Image (cartoon, rainbow, N blue to C red; front, side, top):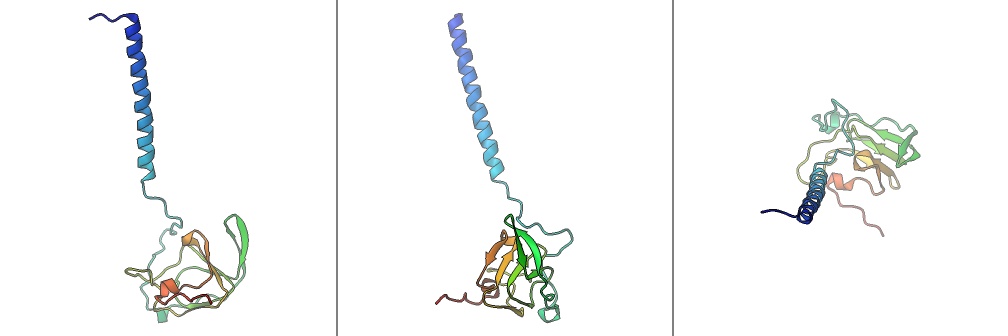
Length: 154
C-alpha cells in the first residue's frame, strides 16, 4: 500500500495532534496528583517539641506575666499583651494574646477538649490569635476546647 504525499502529511498532522493531546492530559494528571498530596502543616512544630503533655494539670506552672510584644500577623505588626508558648493549660489571659506553634496540650479523643481539666481563665473581650489556626483571631474564649458550651450573644 503506497501513500501519497498528501496522505503522509495528514498522518503526520494527526500524530502531532494526538501527541499534543497526550501531553495536555499528562500535564493535567500530574497537576491533579500533585494537588491531592497532603498539605504542609500551617504551623510546623519546632524540632524536639512534644505535642502532648503528660504531667497532671495541677503540676503545670501558670503562664508568665503579660509583657507586650510586637508580632507580625497577616502582614501587619500587632502589639500583643501576652505570648503563650510551651504548656497550654493554666493561666489568666486578658487583652490580646498570641498562642505560638510550640504550645503543648493534653491528648484527646473526639472533639479537641484538651483544656477540660485545666485552670485557664480568659477575661471577656480578650482577643486570642492562634498560630496553629492560621493566626485567626478568636473573641469568645476557648470553650470549644474545654467541653463547655459557647457563650450566647444577647
